[in-house]
Length: 91
Image (cartoon, rainbow, N blue to C red):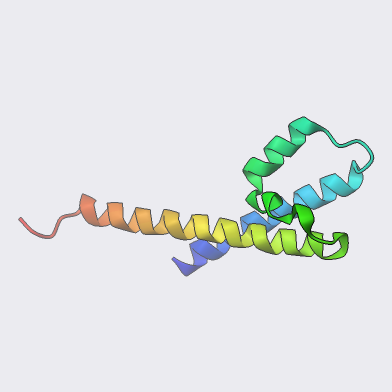
């Protein structure tokens, strides 16, 4: 279970890293359509709008990894709970 949650965090950090690179590459021409996709795939973007620019990227990547880890934890707990209900031990 720890490995799966770590994988969720890694995926979240990877998604955030992609968005950081995308924003840096297209900085002069932001598109509103991309910002809504950003908010869905990287929930940390909703929190980091007031941070200083230098700390913003690193914090954004770490926060997004944390969000994905929480999503992974919830998924694993639900998965574990449904697994217990699928195989009843009491007759």
